[in-house]
Length: 263
Image (cartoon, one colour):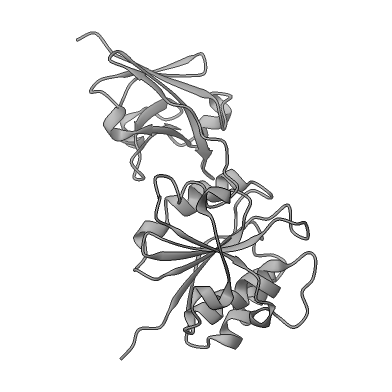
């Protein structure tokens, strides 16, 4: 038996207003056997960089040919392009506003299509709900077997909007990064990968010293901060049973420095 196509949704819609349910209804009206998975609908409103981080750290756990619809779209109704991208054996659909920047990092062979074929959209397209009227039907048609080149025109990968990259500086005794994302628990997730963290390194967030790198939340006393390698493979700073963003007065772009420690 052929497996049903998988379509994921990542948005800042929340779940109070019915928007997510409407998007799912449109998809199922076109591709009734689709399996729809919610990655997140609690992205902070209009926060494209947060959506980019969540999508980049989630899509790799899905099967090949999964269709990912990502819509955090403060420019809806403007001239920003609707796009479809084939990359990493998966498909990404949404606005060309940088939301796919992290997914496309180090991807030189991705195929990009500007969604121009309105016959695969809803009959009427509003200026404020492209997730319902454009992205959802395109995802459903693709999942039903319509090829990318029928949904739009090929575009250059280099033409896509990219979010500014967060600089990472390294030398034998020091790593300088920053906070990339703050999760709902207030944990600070950095752009420092696990292979850049030296054994027993000392961590500083902003001007606050955290001490040596630990192993998990439980390796700190309640209310105390701790730095460790998170499940996503990046250095994370947390407060045991508390919020690191509040206790350390830190957020996205706060500097994080690792020092070589004396043995």
